[in-house]
Amino acid sequence: MDSIQKRHLVIILFIAAIYFGLFIRPNIVASLNQEMVQAFEPDEAAVLPYIFHMIAPAENLNQSLRNFIFYEYYYYGFPYFAMSAIVLLPLQWLGQLGNTPLVMLILRQLVSVLPFLAGLIFLVYLQDGFQTFRSPLLFIFLLSVPAVIQNNFWFHPDGITFLLVVLTIFFLKKDNLNFGRNFLIAAAMCGLATAVKTIGAGFFLAVGLTLILGVIQGKVSKKQLVGMSLVFILIMGLTFFIANPFLLSHWARTAFMNIVHKQSVVLSQGYGVVYVKGILASWPSVRQSYGGFLFLLIAIGVALWGALRGPQRLLHGLILGWFIPISVFFFYFVHYKFQYWLPAALPLFSSLVVLIPEKRSLGTIRGKSQIFQIVVLLIVSIQFALFLKSDIQGYSQRVHRADNNPNILFYDKAVSVLASVQDIHLNIYHDYRLYVPKTPNRESKTTFDLLDYSYIQNSKFDVLLLMEQRIQDYLNPNMSGINPKLFSLNQQFYKDANNGNITGYHLIYRDDHGLIFVSNDLYQKYYQ
Image (cartoon, rainbow, N blue to C red; front, side):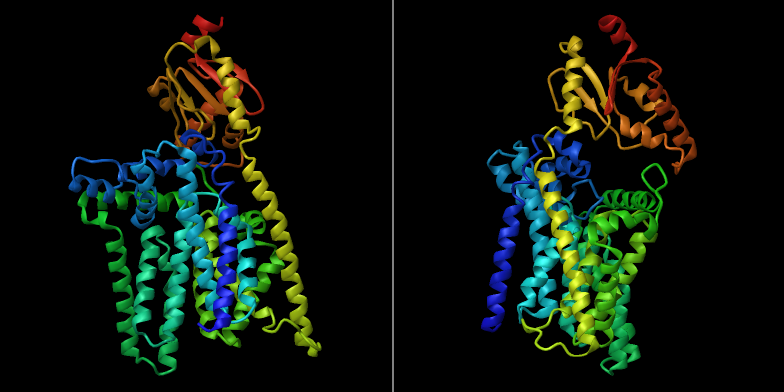
């Protein structure tokens, strides 16, 4: 790097450090205990026991390695769990794993925010090489995308996945159709991305593009094209297996395949109920997290121009070769969630750097093309301002999310309503979004599956804490179940709950947020 590149890199790292620090406050609040973490974000709480088990003290080294490798929650790959466990090792040694706010802060900052910042820095380098003032501007713009802010508020594998996707593009670009060491490293990065979140298969078009261009430019023959394709797939596959060492076990492989099958059904159809797919159904969330239609159209148009006529045609071709298939998959083959599109949208948005003049002054405006460039840049600037407004609102809401939170307030009401039975042991069911901390004489349980009478009766709950919104959601006449029979049983339960007459239970409290039922035995003894 020359002095100019180093200066721009220092500026970017300084911005990144400030950005990293800004997330400390929102990422430590509202995490008093694991139950509060679950109430706000069930996905975060679900993995914590498995990570703790990975680094739990064991009788010997062999058992420690088994605990670490066979973590038994194979919804996400080993690299994500390994990194999460490793960053928590110091807390394990200090006996601080019970300090939930500190645990969540470290996980959110080091497993979500830090990899995302690294991925964005590589993305900026790909587009501008830190050669001009455009690099810091592009970095700031990408940091402002609301989906980035939102993703950095939680502990999830998407930061690692994004970094690995960017590294795959980075090494494909660096290889420059030479099909050498960097091409093989790209295959390994793609394998790692697949190991974390089975996303690497979306690179088939981008890799195919590089091979076809290699043939067109005479760098490889058609026979070599087939060979290099097989080499890429082989390295990708080997990396996938090496990165997931639990696959060495027959039992773990079986569990993994069962989970993959289950997840494919859930993602393609829905969680118990059928979710509508497609860009129109997803558009409100897309607009909120990634910007308006005109902005997205500009980003796609700029990437297309870059691939056809720009100074970095290979880079923009790779970005589009990745963006198109992965976007089609996430919008039309699974039900959309904001974090799914991050690895596709941000490389696309990075192409907008070509709109910024390399010199700080435009000088004399000449020609329609320059006027058009200024108008488009103005639209992007307006979108940037809208992003910042949304970011400030989202940041403030996150910092204060526990203040007067209805889930927490409902727990306080439940404590008051159940005061008559506070001294006896209670088996409590609660909807998973409700806050129910561990307390003496209380055993609480929840489920993410469709709720019905068989679950309630088999578990013999003394108290039911139900959310009003969940009842109304499942009674929505426009909603249909994946399994009509099970969904019918679920709706019958919620119809009874809505009418206040669950068989075997008595409604003792209801407000706009939730309902409290106690068993008939408890009602007759303590509430009549």
